[in-house]
Picture 1 (tube, rainbow, N blue to C red):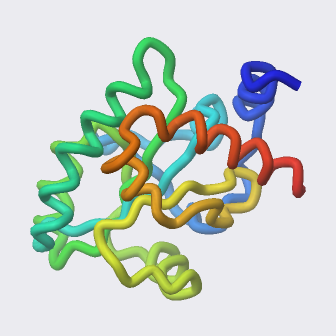
Picture 2: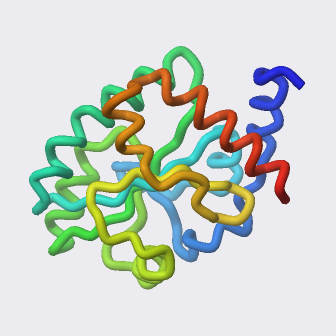
Length: 166
């Protein structure tokens, strides 16, 4: 099956059972985003970072350029920010500058996800299987840095393969 046909199938993937999202996901303006809206985007990544981390601040600009490039002219990727910020004020400052989505500050769901998956390095960018919330690929940060927008095709193929394993 051609990649474009499989990509269409990814749009139809449900994320109703996504285990991390035990609370709402928000836009930078604080508006809740429905699971249905998230299911319209074929690729999902979690971005784990913090304002206090110099590497996070440095990577943010590169990630923002990547996000804007791969989503033009059609949205192919959504990112959800998982905060490890030191304070709610830092979290709000971070979120206000992002074009992507976020979870609330200091949630048990985020802490549990990070702990269960041994995510200790920040910033981290994780490609997620929308059907069940498992990690397809942990080092997407390296892909953004070294491959740029070309990484999106690899991520599409990895996501298609992971979706076959349902």
